[in-house]
Structure formats: structure tokens, C-alpha cells
Amino acid sequence: MNKTHANPARLARGARLVVVAALGLVASAAAFGQSTTGSVFGYAPPGDVVAAHSTTNGNQRKVHVQADGRYALRSLPAGVYNVTLEENGKAVLTHLKVPVVVGRGSKVDFDCTRGDCAKAADRS
Image (cartoon, rainbow, N blue to C red):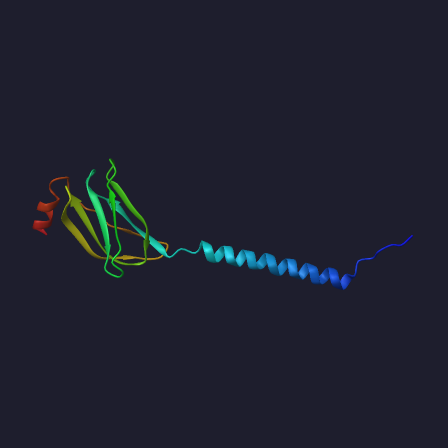
């Protein structure tokens, strides 16, 4: 009978390769999971539009305000934004220089009622 015995050194070397490969996969998954974006959220008059315009890179995004008055602009590249409330396609109120930080949200509320936001801007 011919018994084959595994070489202990060869097994150890194979085990090390498996561990190194597994660590490499974990590290690459962590790198892909890192975010480079943040968000702007808050309250505004339902039915209006909130726009964020980057003063850093020129990007612009818009979102409609929900029926409950909430809005959220997610996945914005980090930078500085001017956040504007629009009524019927016209800019009526702007918050300047809103920072968007990686992994965080900046709260920007528009404290006015639909149709009265332009008047609120005139009073400030």
C-alpha cells in the first residue's frame, strides 16, 4: 500500500496564500464602500422645488418637495452649494455657501408658506 502524506510546509504556504487573498478581498470591499458624497435635506413648502448648485464644481440637482414638506438631495459630491427654493420655476429664496461634507447631511429649511416665500425673502 502506498500512502501519500501531505507536505506540512506546502500546506502552511497554501494556508498563508488563502489568508492573504481573503484580506485583499476585504480591503478592496472596504475601499469600494467608502463614500465621497453627502446630502442636503430639510423642509420647504410642499409642491415647490429645491435646487442645489455647487459653487465648487458647477453641478446642479433639483428635487420636488414632498406633500409632507420634506425634501432630500442625496449623493451630492462634497463641496459648497447654494440651495435655492423655486416656486413655479422661479428662484425665490436662497441659502448661500451650504457645506456638503462626505457621509453627512446639511439641514436647510425654508421657513415660509407656498406663495409667500418671495415676500419672506424681501423681509430678510
